[in-house]
Image (cartoon, rainbow, N blue to C red; front, side, top):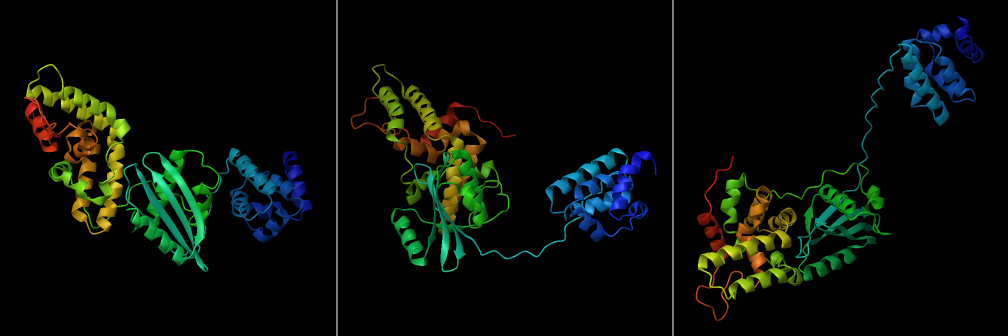
Length: 388
């Protein structure tokens, strides 16, 4: 043993360890572990760094996770690094034996459709002894988490709360709780720093410690989404029927936000300049396009439609659900043409009087537009195109 190795060798000898036995891999793990746990643990870990042998590195790698003292674990990592610098590769960590999973109480998830403001309700429920842990959240698209309540509720309370929501046209339907968990995590991230008592991430460990899944709207097996854009276009041609579903009755634009566009439409209809019907149509289409982009941003509207389509499908209305999914597909595929979709045009027109109908005393040449005519006029005034 050279002088360079003397300090480490002295420490090993003092602790009753044989350097040759360690280098050969014949030292007892339990004996070394007991010494590492003692008052000389750090010194021993440092001393082992003077033995550049693979068996020593493997011994330290095996024992690192079993050592309780933080300073000793740090010394072991330091020694493993020193050994690697001297040509002894650090062993790969051993795979942990698979531990039997303890079955957690089944979590239930419930979700509502979006309302006209972009709000919806999400519930997560976990059974407790003598009750249920309820997380009741109000989410906005695209604003994020608006409200969060965490309570220990009984069955009667839960039933009364659901009945109250349904009386307000907010029906809750079952959904995979992991999907709703991901939506809650996304919503809190969007909303920023939560107010006291409204922090979902603080209560989330009571439901799961797994990483959240990527956020996505729930998907119902009862309503197949369009296979491609062509199928979506064919379905969306009849999408104006969606306005008859109760979930969409409050989806009209905010009156204050729609006022500038209503004024523009009124100005075109009452313009002192004589306009041909084609000129009026073109100007009103421009108003419709601007109003659609401002009042119903396509990405936001698509997300709301996808979430509401799930509720439609889960409440026995798969045909309406497919219409909503078709519109969402077109909004994502060609957002600049959102105003050409009949359902979207109908939403905009509901808040802009005169955009699609004559006044009570129409002037000669005044425009009559329906959502279908908007599409027809668009097709007749622009050359067709083939999707690549």
